[in-house]
Length: 113
Ligand code: 5GP
Ligand code: ZN
Image (cartoon, rainbow, N blue to C red; front, side, top):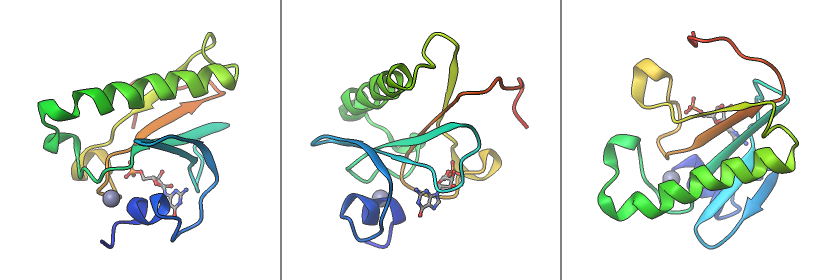
């Protein structure tokens, strides 16, 4: 499997890991766009949000709750943060393994560019 994030899960590519359990991995983005920029991923390869099935409802919930927990640890839960699943070309998805961006530590614009 040539997927970059699967390689990070298998420790074939190094990453700054901030959380791990049996199903979820979270690591700092290599090119951070905010003081906190963490990617929260399922260990199981799922290409895009379009590929989710009802069997994935649990893992998507876990990704969301983990992002909120990391935001709390970083002290940005109350001030605010953004979570994003970029999906396919128009949203700028560059890695085809779903990842929840957790961005925070600065104020952000809406709508995004
Ligand atoms: P996307 O554009 O697909 O939504 O997000 C992919 C993210 O992965 C980007 O924010 C990019 O900086 C990050 N990224 C790409 N390659 C690596 C890598 O090797 N290590 C880490 N930690 N992040 C990466
Ligand atoms: Zn993968």
